[in-house]
Image 1 (cartoon, rainbow, N blue to C red):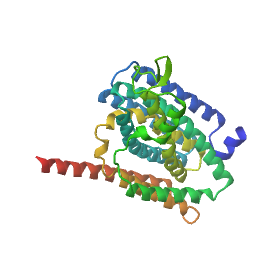
Image 2 (image 1 turned 180 degrees about the vertical axis):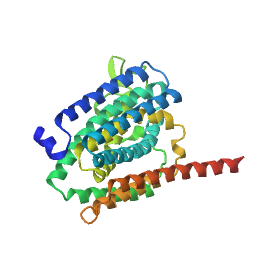
Image 3 (image 1 turned 90 degrees about the vertical axis):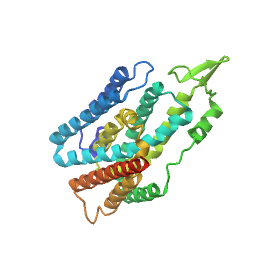
Image 4 (image 1 turned 30 degrees about the vertical axis):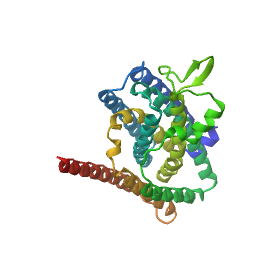
Length: 317
């Protein structure tokens, strides 16, 4: 284990263990503080929670940069920003999932908690696997670069038309082996109906969220390896960005659909880092340049969305 970590990251074994244990502890503290009982999370509470997660991420980023060097600190911040921006797009999909399964607002935090917990485990596995593959086969960089450029093109062409998450292939496969029901049993994932233990819509929603995150990982993992080839930087920046996803959902759920230029912005970001990865052997773009470009694209997409929405509101008056 020690040799593997030394090969793929500058971070020592104790930091991997401490970070992972700390993340799990923070998750369960978060669940007990903000997710106790079945109640709707208010925008104010979500803002406080989101601010706490961002503060935790930035504080760790500062410590890590001081401890292991400014270059890795910049890579960490860039990776965090990329994953955070991709997570906003993921929020729209989660909104459709909750709508399809008609998940009441008071149960959504619990579903998101277990969705995020599963996402952390999957991301950790795939990031370590990806880092090891990069260490053994350098040419995979070009495969990742190609995936990002293709994803950028897909983002420009796809629409956000509503889909019925209940028709997801994972749900259909699950229903063949696990009895399901459309009834709810509070915030529980299963209930006993006519003597048969059945999965509630909450459990089905968690399954679809996990499958969706697996699909999103195809975009985000190559993206973070375009920013850094250090496995710990990739892992920690991804996980800290994902941790704030639940709080961000309750902040942005009401108007995430108004971010009309989000997908073009993400396409520009993925296209840029895909090209950066393909040109790595020819010209290495400095980390601070990548951070500046990504931040500028996000700000431009957000301000453009806000401006156009404001102009449309004025025309409707």
